[in-house]
Image (cartoon, rainbow, N blue to C red; front, top):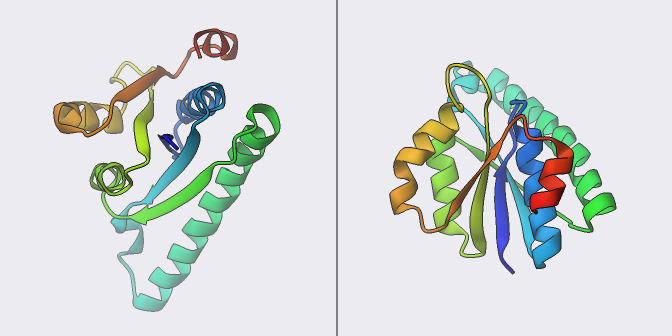
Length: 151
């Protein structure tokens, strides 16, 4: 089954990327894989503190994921899977795309700030020519109704 890989982070545009991935998966018989990356700088502490912080970060991610997962299951009939990786976000996203042969599309939300679409979009756009899958950018300020009409 082809999976839409979507990145779960704290950005506002993440919501539209999640919506788009779930709606496309529902309409095409695909799946959704939600990837969250814990940056390494969060754990630059003593071993015991780092382990506690890692566990707390995973718990926050799982709670955040469950909000989206419930919506996907209830409204779109899609049961997403969660993948949590640790490291540099761009490196880990690229690794996930390359390691999972079922990932067919990378879905990212594009920010609406004057500074640009966001660091992930900028960095992954540079690597897009060598990605093994297409990358879909979803505008962060696109309305839910417009998303529904184009998916």
